[in-house]
Length: 172
Image (cartoon, rainbow, N blue to C red; front, side):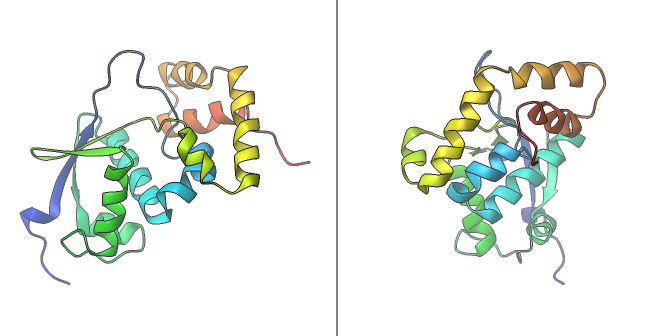
């Protein structure tokens, strides 16, 4: 395995959002897996989830070895946007979930609802499921529940899953 260079280490830091604009879903949520996956792609979805894990451990910013990040999602690391890892990371940027800054990337901690255009490109069944999901969330403030759990000392990852389970129907 080649030696790690300083070019292989990138800093990911939270993307500062204006008050009231940091809304959406935890990158590890069922919403992201169910609805963003077909838009973002599996490798990019896993990358954004892994970055969220790093930011949970280092909330002010995390220096991440790109080779390790790539391998953690089943990709080999090669510099450049033409590699599978580079393309997946670029998709995160293309969909405005990360953005380059002078020293690395700013990362959105919350993934927004899909846009109308993105929904229009989805399979009809998935669009119908999405409409039902949104109807359920209008009657439940999932973000408030998650915030209360985190404030009470619950791990952010566990709080996101627990809050989401309030609105997700269980299988019978």
